Image (cartoon, rainbow, N blue to C red):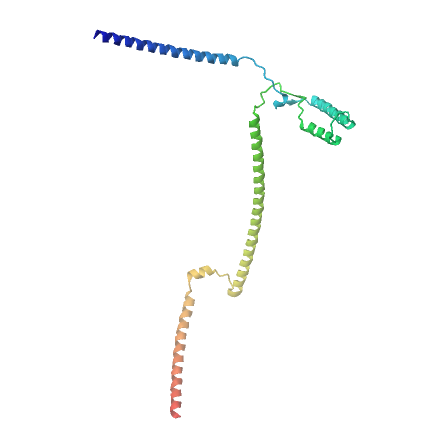
Length: 245
């Protein structure tokens, strides 16, 4: 029993030592990580020189006097080179001299010359863009310009259609007024007044019309009765004549 108790005490001591060692190891790793961060921060504070070409800098200010001077020098150099090619002072192989001069001129136009341009003294009015972002902005501007052009064209077409519809509406309204005037003139000639046919259909026949209809009905019945009596008299006379024969 005593032996088991000693083993349990030794196990507890070992667990405590292991926990202490793990804590120390964790603390040491944190110290190493902090040291690495501090070292990187110190390295980032070191001054480093970065080589850039002038054409990589787009935020340039033009010095008109120096630009004009460099353009003149460039033009003089180009004229001297063309003269040398034309006189054969420069070996161009089997290439045609006129073609070589044209190629020299095209290269001079394509090649960008940033001499006479300088960085501004202050950058507070400048905005930094990467080349990709700048291209995206330029492409977006072109897309917006195309959309504006299409919308302007569509607006112009819609305006023309609207003017045409307005013109057709005025013509139809004029035609309607002309038909209405002819209709009213016909009513005045026939009835002596403008009659609202819709109100006549809704209101039905007047009392005077009903009396006339009643008189006509009675007259019609009397005529039918007279015709029947005359027909009976005719048939009677016809039978008498037939019996006499």
